[in-house]
Structure formats: C-alpha cells, structure tokens
Length: 255
Image (tube, rainbow, N blue to C red; front, top):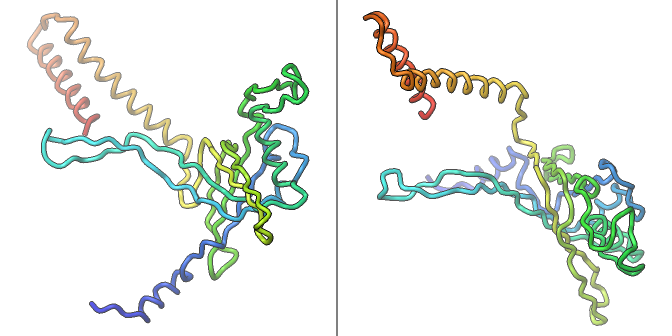
C-alpha cells in the first residue's frame, strides 16, 4: 500500500494533530503538606519559571529465564521503578526561585552551620535529616493539547522532594543569557491520567478467596499427618475424595 500524505494528515488531524513539547506546565504544591509555607514564592508563581521538565516514564524491573533451560530467554516483570523527574527553572533577578529551592533543601538536611554546630532551625540541628512528612510536597505536570487548551494529560506525583539542586555557571561573557537552575526530584508514587482507579473491596475479595483455598489445602496436610486407617469402605472413599479435591485446588492456584 502506497503512502498517502493526505490520508496521513487527515488521520493525524482526527486526533488533534501532533503533540508539541512546549505545551506544558509544572505545578508544585507545598501548601498541601504539614509544614510552614515557603516565605519566598507562592506555589502558583513558581509554575511560570519551569523551562523544561521530563515527563516520568514507567519502568519495570524484569528477570530473564529459560522455560525449558535452553532456547531463547524470556522476561517476566518483578517490580516497578520510579524514574526521577528532572526540571530546569529560569531564575529571577530577585533570587526568589533560587531561595525557594535552597530553603526547601535545608528543610530536608540542615546544611547551614553559620551560627555554630549546636544551632538549630525549626528544631533541626546542622546536618540533621528531617522527617519525610516535614519536607515532601506534591507535583502536577500538565501536558496540553495542540488544538484545545482545555484538553490536557495530567501526571500527579506524591511525596516529592528535591534530591539535587544543580550548580550555576556564571560568566561575564554571556550578556544576554538567562540563568537557569536544574533540579532533580524524587517521589514515592505516581498517578497517570489514563490509569484505572481500583476499588477497596477488589483486593479484599481476592485475598479472602486465596485464604479460603489455602485453608482447604490444609486438609491435605492433616490427612497425611494423621495416618489413621479408614474405619470402613465409605470412610476410605470419603478420604480419597477429600485428598483428590485438595490436589485440584492446589493445581488451580498455580495455573
């Protein structure tokens, strides 16, 4: 089948056209956590200074195995890894953005010793690591559509905190260069807009069924351990039926 540029354009337009990487906004919500509000910049103003951001991927950890001990290897997932979020923020000449992140980092580890090694900031001594609930925030990345500003895809990150605040390269030769600050973030969980939301009873019902099956399997162990001879022919038939049903349940667990 020959490639048709008009057909390609029509199909792309059907889905709103190509997505553009410059249509995004990053919001950090520090007021949602139980700690004093940052004194340098409101959360709503910080989103205008985020120049670049990485939309986090979803990475699975896998292990390789050979089903028949030979042939091609296959992979099975064993877990999931959180991909760090890297952002670059433009700096203002009043140094509010820079102060915002330096103050945030100090809430994690108090790196200031200007008042002595026994001084404290909010009961936090120099180089003391704070409790996680005192410095984490939430982050929201909105990726907007090219043709509809009301259409966007949201990634929500929970328990966010900066793990690295980059250095600044200052130079007299760069007269028109805007200063930027790279910041790397870590988080404990993510929520993608396309992800399905589970129900609290779904896991419970699955767990109950599993426990019931394991309880029934316990009858097999009891039959083996007791080693009591059947008292009659009917008793022997009943014992054989119980053991047979238990084996069937055991096999169904590993299908």
